[in-house]
Amino acid sequence: MNRIVRRLRSDSGMTLPEMAVVMLLLGIIMTFVLQAVASFERAATGGIRRLENLDEARTLMDVLTKDIRTAAKLSASTPPFFVSGNPSVVLADDNEMTFYANLDLTTPCPKKIHLYVDSKRQLIEEVTQPNTGNTPPNCSYTQNAPTDRLVGQYVANDLADPAQAIFTFYYGDANGDLVPFCASASLPGCSLAGDQTPLSVTNALLVKAVGIRLMIHKTTTLPIANTTLLNRVRLPNVFYNPPPSPSP
Image: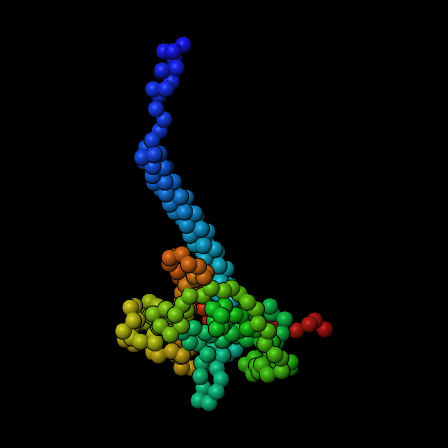
């Protein structure tokens, strides 16, 4: 019995320095674990944000493509883009465009569609119905107030930077290749023969296709780059096809 008591008395516990070392090691391990969890959470959140940006960009691109593909001329001597003012100005610019839409053929004259980005970085589709009693090419749009539809948001294009223009207008050169009309001939891919935008009436008649550049970035504190989609839509260059006259 005495030997057992002496053995128990001789067993020493953990000293304070040893406990401090153990706690330090546990702290280091927990720091690495928490950093790994935080890094994984940032990566997962970043992936979700990128998918949201891509989904938004696809929605906007789909609407723009479908709308622009319906552009129609009122006559052989007029462009598909809306012309207004004196002197005449074609509403086809780097970041907005207005055109006659061969869409929902229920009126003698086509609808007028205005595509633009507002101050909240939202893409807006503004649709105006034609005046009643008009027939092409004499179509007016003063009787009806335009209706706005929110197509999407988070547009990140720098509207003041020509290199980030949403719309680029292309004409066909002597070889049939598409060449852009540019705000500056020094921009990459721009021809020296290119004209300034907004387009003149003469150049608007030459437009064969419209390029679209969409840069989307949902607000976030994460360092996520803009999601950019590019597309080029060939204009059908067709005349507006009004509804047929009712049978007698």
